[in-house]
Length: 211
Image (cartoon, rainbow, N blue to C red; front, top):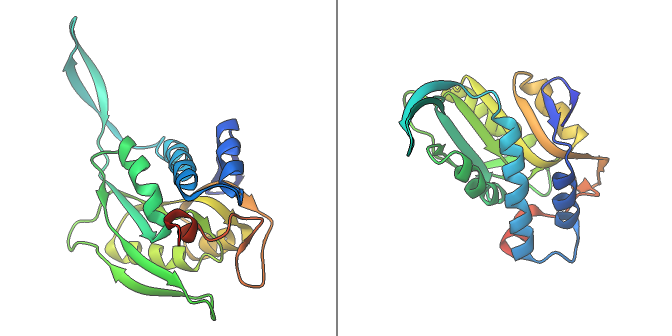
């Protein structure tokens, strides 16, 4: 793992590089693509949750009793629809008690600006930590819109988990929400004229859902 700039962590590991290389390939089928997304999401979540609060918990083993610890943080998992859905299940495997709240955002192909079409956040007390998941961080528009919504909800700590990011998107998120930590598997060179990450992996939503 290496840190690129404050609050930005690039998860640098042989398994990450392995699955990311296969994820990018145009020869990777949708079922294979979903499998690689799940594996990378697990590795991202593992790194992003190292600072979760814990509390003591006594258990009885087959031999005796002992005091261990359990996570005491209330966690909200927030996938940005629709591509973020592919990252939900592997994170829930690690955090089965997490709440899942959906935000529907898509990028207008003409303006490259985010468009809200769905939000399902409860009134009242927010979670302690929100993990926003979206495979791609390109311009940062959708991520910023999601972070704005969570800030209005009152979430004290938000982390953004993306498999691939462009530096432009990272910079935009940091400028708007400098308190947010960003965890990615790779930062690619650039955005093309259509605001797609290059070399990237194409449209994560289309490849996940075979559309």
